[in-house]
Length: 298
Ligand SMILES: [Zn+2]
Image (cartoon, rainbow, N blue to C red; front, side, top):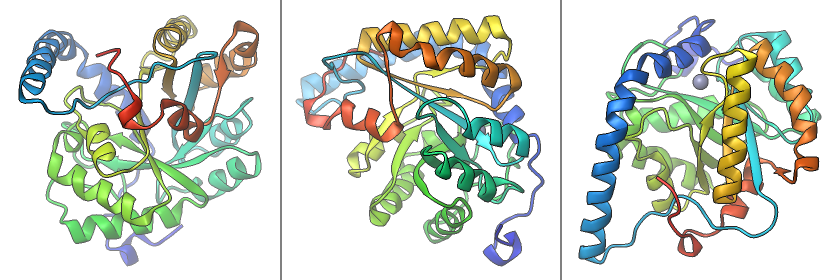
């Protein structure tokens, strides 16, 4: 693990960052319900205005042929060793997204890589609540130079990382300037894809990734905002329905015992049910080039 001091980053204990991540989403939930309506109205207006202006729309999902494709990411890894080890042993190509500068992050990344799993950097971005959430968080007052340095040291702390998704970030992903800095940095590095965890419906991260030629996709379902078997099952069924409807669906879960037990039992059944469980990189390939996509949801 890199010294946070040497990296010029704030040293913050992060044992609860995963829980806060889920809490942030849940606490926002009532607000989301009302936002959803206005978001849809805004979405429709944007669509009309762009169409009138002749601008190209940013497509979200491809219409694909063949079996519906599902990708699953478990993030918030790095603070709990046993949960990380269990995640790295999940059946199939489940991506393991590891928080930087965490006690077991490098070890879990090595284990996941050895098990043939895709390793991702789970990059902390400033949320609307909980300003101090994790070491190496990119804030609204982070400069472009600081941001590039944070990416460099964070990537170094998560060996074998081939992609990035945001930890929290309900504030920062709404800011096009910072997202442009982030995506141009990922593009400059040339070897990383991006998954918008979509912690805010106002996130512009996916759109700006595409504009910067960073291979990207967006999360559809959080599997375990309520970490009970019944709730996880409901979300998993929703993930499958979206995969059927759109051709591709991306789910994000966390290393909770209920989530891991559920996935251990249910991931091996997907193939028999006609789904294809794939790596995130493969799901982005299936999603295809932006110019080949059509808007089919949101
Ligand atoms: Zn997270």
